[in-house]
Picture (spheres, rainbow, N blue to C red):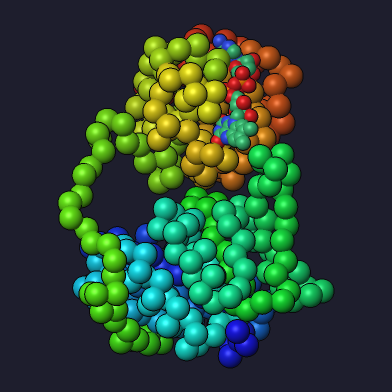
Length: 333
Ligand code: FAD
């Protein structure tokens, strides 16, 4: 598809209540610089139902323009409705680039949209850049089981599409009351063209759920915790700091803690203010999911552990001595 503009679009996925999902607001942040490099506008594409809150958030997070598609059929995600709506609006405006959050839904619509548009898609990116020489977005993603970080350029097709993991970028501070141009697109999908419908929502057991991506503090435990009971002192420290407990894959695979706690390439990508890694060696696949944390503290009894290479503070010692001592100090504050 020939691009009609040099604009960079960010897909703003919404919740059923019409508010914006964080990942879209996060992507507006790198999107600003990339749009300028491309020589186009930064556009937030909002799709959902009763989306006023999302539109306001996109304006306050620095978009030059918001395009909104609002309709009852978009309240709950369905692949057919979302892909049809996105295809229609993208072919109408033909932007140069589109960023999509790699949520479950983003991972569903991204490839289908790229196939309908006959263009490429770089999935699950963890870094974005701009290749000045060729004028393409430089998409970086883990490859070969996370052993390599591959940077991919898409010089031949437009729009260039990519999904980006939630939590990789931080949203900019919102500028309250900021506004920009809002274009409403009256795009609807006939019910008979939507092959799936929501019958019932089944919530997972809340005790198994953890909001790792939104947490400011994560106390994470690896194989070094030794068993499920090894998470108790970590949970106490997390509670004292107002945080949540994370885990390495080794601990999840051992069945010591639920997969929803896993940080890393095949778990969540997190960027808390404080990440405390306890008994975690620092394998590349783990680090891929937490290296953008503001402050990393490592507690490990092996002073050679690679986690110390990326830690801001390191404690060489037994986590079962260090963690309770830390909790006791935190409780004094
Ligand atoms: P280990 O590497 O065994 O390290 C345990 C550490 O605990 C050691 O450094 C040891 O010194 C320390 N220790 C032991 N006892 C104590 C104690 N009492 N006090 C203090 N320190 C102690 N891993 C992830 O975490 N997330 C992923 O998403 C992920 N995805 C992967 C995807 C692929 C395709 C592959 C191939 C691997 C993936 N892995 C992932 C696995 C990864 O390669 C490592 O195997 C894993 O991260 C190791 O977990 P660990 O650090 O807990 O265990």
